Amino acid sequence: MLVLFETAAGYAIFKVLDESKLQQVDSLYKEFETPEKANKVVKLKHFEKFTDTTEALAAATALVEGKIGKSLKKVLKKVVAKEAHEELAVSDAKLGGVIKDKLELSCVHSSAVAELMRCIRSQMESLISGLPPKEMSAMSLGLAHSLSRYKLKFSPDKVDTMIVQAISLLDDLDKELNNYIMRCREWYGWHFPELGKVVVDNLAYCKTVLKIGDRTNVATTDLSEILPEEVEAEVKLAAEISMGTEVSEQDIANIRHLCDQVIEISDYRAQLYDYLKNRMTAIAPNLTVMVGELVGARLISHAGSLLNLAKHPASTVQILGAEKALFRALKTRKDTPKYGLIYHASLVGQTTAKNKGKISRMLAAKASLAIRYDALGEDTNAEMGVENRAKLEARLRQLEDRGIRKISGSGKAMARADKYQHKSEVKIYDPSGDSTIPSTSKKRKFEEVEQQEAAEEPTTSGMKPKKPKKEPQVQGEQAMKGRHEGLRCSRRSSLTMRISEETPETSAEPETPKKKKKKKEKKAVEEPAEEYHLHCSIILQNFLFVRSLFDTILYFCLFEKRF
Image (cartoon, rainbow, N blue to C red; front, side, top):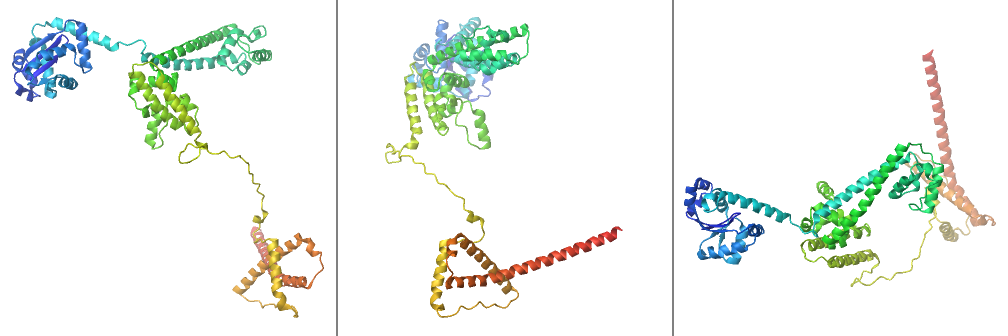
C-alpha cells in the first residue's frame, strides 16, 4: 500500500512495509514512538518539493477545493502509475474520488488511514530526509499566510460585506435621527410650541429653528428658501401670539447645535442610501429589480452574505425575518406567518390583503432564483429580474381581475357586466305581531260570515230563531272548559267589534233580519264571558277583604306586645 502525504514543502509518497499493523488502530501510535520503529512500518518512496510559495499555494487551494493540481498529477503519474496494482491511501475521500476518476487508481480512506497520517506527521522530520526543521517551519508559516490572504481576497465589485454594514448603519441612523428630531421638537417647543404644528416636515423644522433662533426674530427673518409662502405667513402670525416661555441665548445656542447635527445626519443618510443603491445594483441587480434595494440589502444582511442567502430555499426566503413568529406558531399549533422581510417589497404592498400571501410566495420563488443567478452567475445584467417581475405583475393583475372573470371551460372569456340597478326594499313594522289574539284578515272574516249565512238560510226559512239554552253549571273539569270557551268567545267578540269599528259604512245601512240574527248570536256568546269576569271580580274582592282583616289582626297583636 502506498500513502499520499501532503506537507507545506511538497508531496511525499510512502510505502507501507507491514500492512498487518494497520489493523490495530488503537495501538498503532506505539509503532511510531521512535524514528527507528517508524522506519520499520513505513518507508519514503518519493518526495516532490515545491519550488516556491506560489506553487505551494496553488497546490493547497486545489486540495481544499478537492481538485488535482499540476504538481500532484505529475507525482501520481511518475510514481504511483508504475505500481498501479497497489492501493493509494489518501487523507480526503473527495480527493480520492477525483484521483480514481481521472487516473484510474484505487484509493483508500478509513479510520486506520487517518491514524496512520497522524503517526507519520509526528515523525515527519525523521521520515523525510534532506528537509531541515527550520526550512519546514518557515515554509509552513509562509503557506499559512498566503492561504489566509487568498481566502480573504475579494473583488471590489462583489463585496456583499459592504452591503451588510451599510444597511445596518442606515437603520442605526434612522433610529438616532428620530431620537434627535423628537428631542429638538420637545426642547424648542417650550419656547415656540406653535411652530411644531405649522411645520410638519422634520428637516424643514430643524432648518427653520436654525435660521430663526429666538421667536422674536421671525418677523425680520426670510424663510422663503425653506418654507412656502402660506406656511411662512402662518409661522409669522403664530410667533406674534405664541404662548411659549422665554429662554436664554445659551439655550438657543444648544438647540441650534442639535439642529446642525440633525441636518448633517440627514445629508449623510441620503448619501449612504445612494451608495447602498449603487452597491446593490452592482452585486445583486436581479434581486434589486425584484424586491428593491432596501429589502434586498436586509435579506442579505439577515442571511450573512449573498452566498448564504443563495443556499436558502424559497420557503425560507419568504419568512426570513419572522423566525420568532414562526416558532411561536409551531409551539402553539397555530397558523404560520406568510411573510417576513419580503412583506415590505413593492409588489406585496400594492396588492390586497386577500392576495398578499400568494404574491409573497410567488415573489419569494422568483427572488430565490434571482439571488442564485446573482451569486453564482457570471453575467451582471438584470434581464432575468425584469422578466420575472413582469410575470409577477401579470399574475397580480390576473388575481385582482379574477372576480369579474366568467367561470367557463376556457376560463378566458370575460363575464358580461350587467347594468347595476339598486333595488331597495322598504320594510314596514307590522303591529299585528304584538297581539296574542290570533288575527284573521277582514276579507276572510266577511267571507266566512257570508258562507255561514248562506248555509243556514234554507234551513231557517219559515222558522223562528231559537234562543240559546243555558246549560246547567257543572263542577270540576267541565266548568274549567266552559270558562276557557267563554274567554275565547270574548276574544272573538272583541275582534268582531274592532272590525265593525273599522268599517263604519256598514253600520250606516238599515238593519235587516240577518243582522238582527247576528246581534242575538253575539249576545249569546258574550253572556258566559260576562259571568266569568263577574266571578273573577267577586273572588278578588274576597281576597282583598281577607288580607285587610289579617293585617288588622297582626297590627293589634304587635300593639299589645309592645305595651
